Length: 228
Length: 303
Picture (spheres, rainbow over the protein chains, first blue to last red):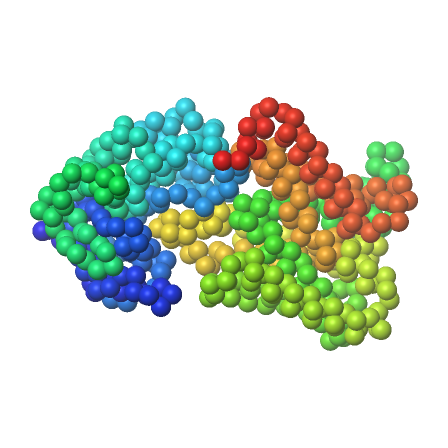
């Protein structure tokens, strides 16, 4: 393995008097696609929140380059459905200092437009965010994570509401980014997808069950969610 | 600044002479109130959009009621009855920051916690107000609760302008960050936003604006001017730019009409009440438009 871009060392998270994560240790190599898999309630999202400084943790989470650009695609935004925010408003809020209502600034504008176009949303920039379909919202949340070009890309089930075309599109873009040196940490429920994209994966159910190449440890067949 | 206010008042008088503005603009306090409205309207209109997007209407209601307690404390400590700014700013800032701090450290839901704080603040305010009322003219009490344009002087305008300047200096560069922090704290953090810091900054802005507007709109009603114009604007907007623009227009128009109309038509109502009633009329009109116009009807269908 090359130099780790991210290192989790004996990470513990306790919330509400309960151990949500216990002694979680694994490395993510630079330029590698690393998937986090595990059951619902297993602590995958909590691990991401600890990584982003949103929940207190014990142990160490080490970034090889603390100044790297972090791209993050959340599962969703906490936003009323009828709020008058268009696709472009959402991109502007995330990418510029000038208040988004005062118009788009030139900063990253071309990159934003390119990301929107790559995710197939070019014709929907004036649509309200709340009126996009679940898959379209995820496309936008993935698109924003691409601007500015991330050194580390963190994604929390970014394709869970997408159709197959959308999921394959995201997979293709992520592969390109990784090939260009971006480190990717990808929470996924879809084991087929993990087998398609991941160089390495970590199975978390409050503790690390295993970590390594997915083909060695993941059972063949669809994810438990689909099987259910 | 007094020269500037005098020049603006002279301008109003000139316009009143030519019949462009009503005769009431010859009155100094009406002109002062109009200057205040020109500042309050855009300020509350823009901040209101954030209050609505961040779902903080109840929070700002609590801050408004805390102003009542702050005024009582000021009078009790011997500040001027008509401008107890030091105590009001101090108490409201402390109230808002402690409430926010507690929100971060409790598992209680926001509405329950704000309900508790609001009740405590009202109980203290009501007790103190009754205690100090013996020293106050009833009209002073009325103007604190519901606003009065009669007492707006150059000092009040100075306070308002200073607060407006702080809001622009702090609020403009942090507007997007404040919204992002409420959409997704994790995403905000990933993008380098200190979510707690911008949250506390927002609480400070709401508090400063609320206290600065108490004179005109009244402690009980000031938060309504943060919420109603923005809510009306939300009814008829299809983008953030439209949302903010309509909110500013509605808030400013409500302030002007609420100040001038009662004088012009000799309605014996407090300025705060009149301003909020005008804003409520905008809300009713936009809510009806939204239901009648096809372009907005689709936007009101629940998911």
